[in-house]
Image 1 (tube, rainbow, N blue to C red):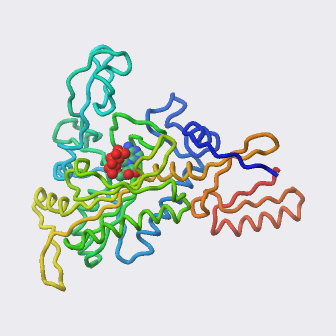
Image 2: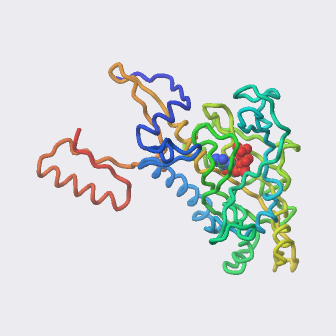
Image 3: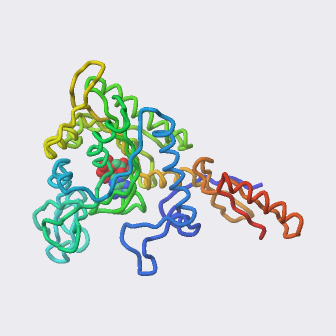
Amino acid sequence: MSKQLPAKVDMEKIVSLCRRRGFIFPSSEIYGGLSSCWDYGPLGVELKRNIKQAWWQAVVHERDDVVGLDASILMHPQVWVASGHLEGFTDPLVECKSCHLRWRVDDLKDNKCPSCGGELTEPRLFNLMFKTFMGPIEDSASVVYLRPETAQGMFVNFENVVNTTRKRLPFGIAQIGKAFRNEITTGNFIFRSREFEQMEIEFFVKSGTDKEWFDYWVKERLNWYINLGIKKDNLRLRQHMKKELAHYALDCYDIEYLFPMGWAELEGIANRGDFDLVQHAKYSGKSLEYFDDETKEHYVPYVIEPSAGVDRSALAVLCDAYDEELDNGEIRVLLHLHPTLAPIKVAVLPLSRRGPLVQVAKQIYADLRQCWIVQYDDAQ
Ligand code: ATP
């Protein structure tokens, strides 16, 4: 009998397990890797797909008040003017006058370069959006940005969705997709990277009902993680203080997970008021008012936004499932993954290569593969 060891989860063990077992590799590894970008390997890609599928199932397929969307990553540059990202999506940075490394002001303990102790410049604002050019000419007229969040795709399609689905308030739009942020301080593995995936819902409600819906979504989203087997003790809610709130937010809760480096944000749920639709109406010149056919009123809806990270969810799932046990004097690493998330659902292990048995085993394998991800192994 193997004896359980207390599971000591540290980030190094998780990174090493992911590397060894083909969950996650450094990006472009044969070239020495690319800072803060990661590649999901054969098991990792299945885990990630299962997380996204579980989310989509819970928030789109099992509800009749949320529809899906897949908007493009490149959007009209005015979107980022309206959303406030062009002006406000910045971090103050200082540069070392000797070694020229740049640092986030919030990360500094004193006014010296943490690397060489050199003197630092005055802080300057640094925009976190990745900039590129549309078409062959690299001038200011062709500048476009890689989206730093998926949310804006849903705001600019609000009217399209209302007109084509005839959804009435309250209803939401959900989207899963890549987002890019030129983060200054990255690290903690896939917790903070420059290319990552988000799962976001923009839930449109009538003002006055927003607080109720906000509370509803905070509970709903917390339960989603618990239902996927994440230990309750490793999850907590943290309400933002007034001074922490983003410029658009009336209220915000973070769902935090106890990662190896401490409590940190897994998902944010914000009451965004009518900020986004008002801004897009102003900059696009299109009315984004909603006509309520019951009350015959025109108004701009409020928005409740649960915004989760796929990669942070994957990291939380891996940390939560990690365990070690003694096996003949050796430490064996286990992952107690929830069946919904496990990359492989069934293993067919015939334990022999004898003709008739193999035939039956192969047939079982072929049948099961129609419904599940199955692994066949006759080697051991
Ligand atoms: P943080 O304070 O940790 O930088 P944030 O408050 O800027 O996060 P949001 O803008 O609320 O994050 O984004 C919603 C979700 O997207 C986050 O809860 C997180 O799961 C994910 N996310 C944001 N930035 C990153 C990143 N650089 N790498 C991985 N996931 C991210």
